[in-house]
Every structure is written in structure tokens, then in C-alpha cells.
Image 1 (cartoon, rainbow, N blue to C red):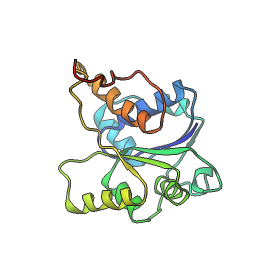
Image 2: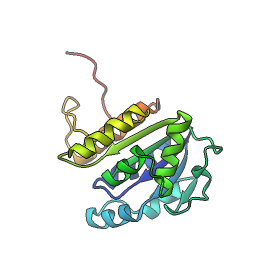
Image 3: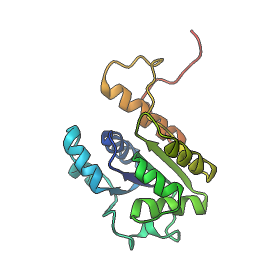
Image 4: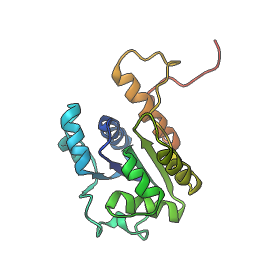
Length: 186
């Protein structure tokens, strides 16, 4: 599977980093775009090194590279995940404002009916943010907030990260063992 991953300047860049690790480990072709904002947030959150994650991707692009292959709908990808997705990026995608490579590649997914998953990372949510999510959902995007789960009995931060990344992989129909699936009432 060929998957574009955009990591934007919202809290939780470790989610995007972990996603790239899992996609790469499973043998998928990752095309990665890391925004300048994501680099800044990573400094504050002391997450994994982007250098390590960039080595796992097949191709890495600058967010300003609108000549990159993923900027064109003639370059077929199977899916795109924006994780985490800042409200700025979500607004750009929802309103067709393709001013950088992440929002342009996402626009291609919407117009070509390719799978687009956004992981919005903000709370609480303003009415404009909710409206942008509604617009994006109506356009065919999948909105996957990184909500916590407790039925899987997380014990560490990594358990909660793995749950969210596992849910993203679920939307892409990629098998994984990152969290225990709900098996019904025992």
C-alpha cells in the first residue's frame, strides 16, 4: 500500500512518528511530509527524532514542495493520513486551500475519492473547527480524533499511543496487534 503521511504542528507528533514506524514495519510505501510546525512541537514534546522516522519513509518531502509527486493526482496513492492534524491544516483541507504539500495531497485524495484520514489534535473545539470537520466529513474524509480508550486497560503512554495508531491502521484495513480488540462482554 502506498500511503502519504503528513505530520503537522499540533501536539502529539509522536502519533505520526509511531504511525510511520508501523506502516514501514508492515512493508507499506510511506511518502512523508513533516511541517515546520511539527518540528517545533517535537522540540517541546521531546518525542522521537524525525531523522529516524524519515529514514523509514520511501520518500520525504518539504511541505513547500508543490512539485513533489504526491502534489499531483496522477501519482496514485492508496491513502493519506494527517497525524496529528492542526486546526490550521484541517481548515485548509476542508476549505480547499491547498497552500502547501500536505493540504494539496489531501485535496487530491478528496477529489479522487482516495482514503483520507485526519487526526485532529485540539481541545476544546471551537464552532469553526467543528464546522471544518463537518465539511471534511461531507467531502469524504475520515475524522479520527485521538480519543482515549479504557476497555483495553492501558498501563502506559505507549499503550494509549498504540491504541490511536491501531485505530488509524484499522481505517486503512491494515492488520496489527497494537491493542486488544473488543471481544464483547466477558
